[in-house]
Length: 402
Image (cartoon, rainbow, N blue to C red; front, side, top):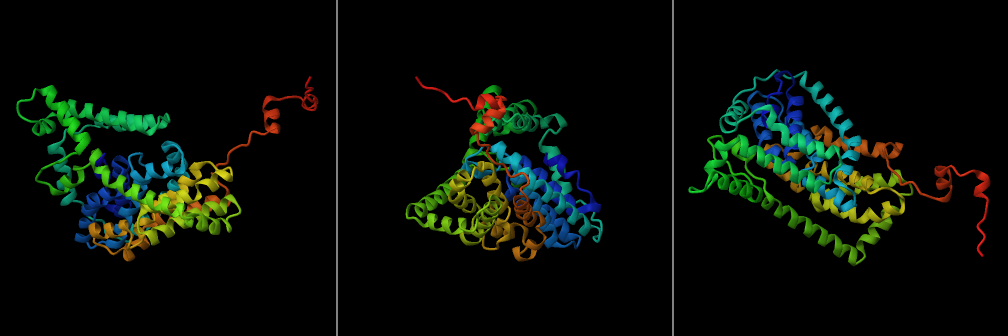
């Protein structure tokens, strides 16, 4: 995915290409931070060398990275939001499309307009070296995309996240054993048979992740990582956020906050709008996107249920207001991280993160217009009579108990 994604970079449409490349990689690996720290750094280097606007380039990188992160079933926030709201992962992703896709299309159009005034860059240097290193280290061909297609196919069939991603990972491991022997065997201990070596390396990678050691530091950073162990810090942070939320709920603070907010949310549209704004506000106050998802999710979950709104409405609102707005806040962990890797102040690049601004706006617009806002159908006696096509005369017959 990374190899073919880099090759779609068109020098005449630099900003659009930046955003699309980062989106493709982010969907495949599920991490906006990794994309920004690897592909993003390479694209920033090209932009700086060609005297292209660094803030606009950073905005394009972040827009693409968070678009891919938001729609990737491998993303931690994309798994966290439906878990907090109480819905299924792929139901959540499918419902997010209605606010995410239009926002990204509009953002790409704006980047395209901005790119018309830029000189066409010549893409070489870091990106060219990265492509060469990928060819030297990995065996690359189109049919190696099969594990990704298997995962996407299972997602389309609405297979639950755990077996879908698990089967995709196992398929990837089998493909690695079949086609990447030159990469696997150096990681195995000497003295092991070929079969034992393959099983050992695959098992270690699933637990500890990949650790490349090549002459290209950029590729080492891009493709090193992963594994179950890499998620422990995120899981611990989520536990801390949920503990903090539980304490606030236990002492009654959440109830007071919810009551004051719900007082101004008499309709479904105002409730969804309030959720999006609250998630963004939590990003500003709590300074972390995980808390911005967990806290409002706990606060509004019961109210969505009371108003007959399915939980995917809540999960989408949490992502629209919490996930994508986190890099826009300079003191947020995401904003601070993006500044550290892209070397652009959030106050400078935030203006050009068009996708990150448009997503909550589109989400609020959909809520106000009632577009793609799901409601639960109450199965009352009238609806049951109509569904069963019971004649009106028979509906009036009363049951006589003897």
